Length: 185
Image 1 (cartoon, rainbow, N blue to C red):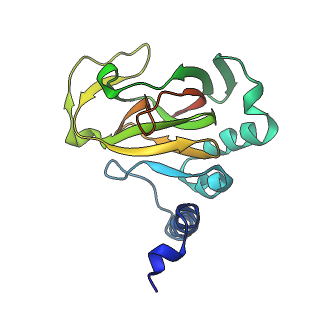
Image 2: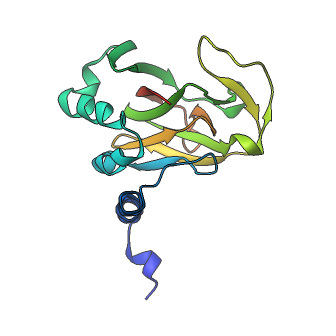
């Protein structure tokens, strides 16, 4: 029997998050510049709290609010953490650019819809413009891998994580409503 065929993608990510969280707790581990994007079921977000002290602020906000009730715009939370509720239609990569941040970690959660997100490590990219301090982003060029973000899942992007959001899923445009938590580094 092929073990990989016996478990679903969701089961794999759940198993991975449990092992990863245990490793973090047991080894007092911190993510460094060579670590990668975190992508998991929102059910398991609590297992990532040891990574950053302000992740608990995000979890409390998620647990105490219906995210679908928020209108598009900025939501100030506490301790420098804020969120942006955004809505858009997914598009081709030709109309997008890879970005990374300096001052904030992104925690992105789709509230409605589905999108693909291109991901890469900043070290493997070329910086193509000057840093936009007001909006905390730097444009990059490079090769990306794709993840699919849908309701019930989240992705965490550290400053070294290049990402391009809002890409069509299976070459089909779709409406997306997403909340992006901005957590100070």
